[in-house]
Amino acid sequence: METIMELQDVWKIYRMGDVEVPALSGVDLKIRINEFVAITGPSGCGKSTMLNMIGCLDMPTRGKVLLEGKDISEFKRDELARVRGKKIGFIFQTFNLYPTLTALENIQLPMRIHEIPEKEVENTSKKLLATVGLAERGAHFPAQLSGGQQQRVAVARALSTGPSILLADEPTGNLDTKSGGEVMDVFKRLNSEGLTIVMITHDPRIAGYAGRIVKMLDGKIVGET
Picture 1 (cartoon, rainbow, N blue to C red):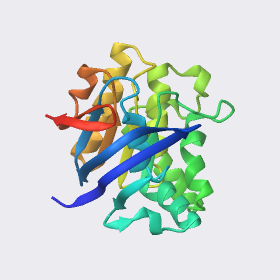
Picture 2 (cartoon, rainbow, N blue to C red):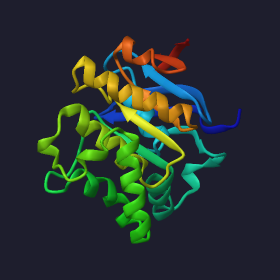
Picture 3 (cartoon, rainbow, N blue to C red):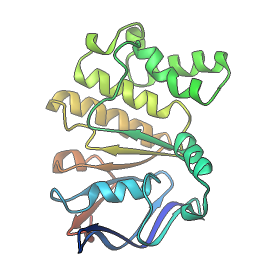
């Protein structure tokens, strides 16, 4: 299966005064197209730093991060911003929806930023709202939606520019068990339709939705299942 993202001997070292603190210590990881990968481990083990590398939000101190075979360190700043905007969708623990925009308008916003034609914006946003099971909630504002519904709107928004890979950082962390399960059901369906997903979670039950579980400890990968 073709590799979409690869980390080669990736180190991320932060300096605190005269002390060097490694967040990642020589990580090697391949993410293949159409995989659903969960990254797990205790707080402070390097999960979020790894996701930042995969999402092209940060550069390694040493090593290489390859997106579709291209070294992201060779991208210019504006090119990297376009890559993040078009090829990578982001889901966070906090939903980050604009409170003054409706569910539909929140989904449409990234497409308008990327100057996608208006007719396509309208059609795609309605289709995505239906995909996450909220076709009847397009005119609702975030405050009128449950936490699980807000996260599903955030999922639809992340998919609006047609990304190659979806990254999720503790996507069920603020949700109850039922709402979290509904979000994960959406993830499973999207993955079955061909979307590559990488998810951080501390919850073994949520990790169980993924096809591969990568376990981290002290900035290193210590096992896979």
